[in-house]
Image (tube, rainbow, N blue to C red):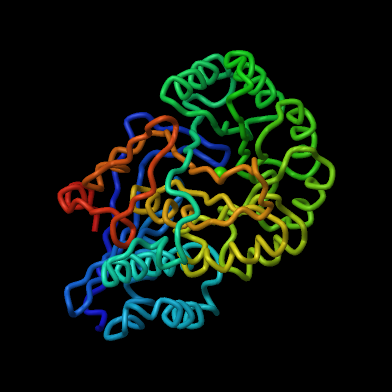
Amino acid sequence: MKIAQVEVFVLKTALDQPFAFSQGWVHQRAATLVRITSDEGVVGWGEAFAQGLEPPEIAAAAIEHALKPLLIGENPLDTAVLWQRMYAATRDYGRKGSVVSAISAVDIALWDLSGHFYNQPVHQLLGGAIRDVIQPYATGFYRISGQKESARLAEEALQHREAGFTAMKVKLGFGIEDDIEVMAAIAKALNDDTIELMVDTNHAYGRSDALRLGQALDQYQLRWYEEPVVPEDITGYAELRGKLNTPIAGGENEHTPYGFSQLLQAGGIDIAQPDIGSCGGITAARDIVAIAQANGAAVNPHVWGTAVAQAASLQLIAALPIPHASLFAKEPILEYDRSSHPFRQHLITEPWNMVDHVIPIPQGPGLGIEVRMDTVEKYKAN
Ligand code: CA
């Protein structure tokens, strides 16, 4: 079997209501999707992570110009061989960011294709499922004006609980005093110690402010404190981790086993958060999981893309080991972005349904989803 076609689809749509995280205002939702088709007609889909400020055309160009020529005519079941070839060919200008996201999209598509070929879900190809359902957590609390939104954000917390979420992650990084006010308002409104809270500043602060915020939030028994400092500041990560009680999480802006190895060996994080659409795909994520486990850290994938990226995350999470096994060990949880996204779930024929606070892992071949071409055509920008 040979790879016959590699097609890239850039999807974009403007948002009616722009929203902010600490790094800027998000005006559109976008995705870089790739469809790989073999000469036998077996198809696989993948997605490159495009964060809110990232033009999806960068990864699309990398796939089209740098990776596609390496793939046509090759055996699509050679996932590890092709990963090494793509990485080596782009090493001198890639290694981090959108080029690795492009490799990730291709790699996810090759695993999806392999799953269809073997008629097995990706988690089976990874060695089998440790779990068949997963608890999602709500990622939300984005801002629509900026600061002084604690009353609205407290109301939002109640809406997530009403929708069935038992864990939620609050976007902070809008000024220490504002952050503290927001957390106090949310904790007071929920008044519920069965709801787990996490925070994410998207690396808004330097070490001392990040520490000051972390100390103020230690009282909330957070499940984790995400991206406290910039991803380059590995020493800062390790310092904060030594000084705070709250577990430190990070990794959505880290890439490949090489990058994660440095962060983990420095003792920077308790929880590694590779995004399957940017860490190097399923092939890289599998190695990152092993490195995390060897360094005593848990893995909880980051995901902010469409249902294609969510499906890749679900498949990996199904097979994710718990590094500190015990009778009542914490299970990994699925990041579920609750911010506005007009085509996130419309891209697949069977959108997820949360039942009794959990989502079932898709059991169909490959990623376990069917992509709707009518939705692709509707939002296609290239
Ligand atoms: Ca984040």
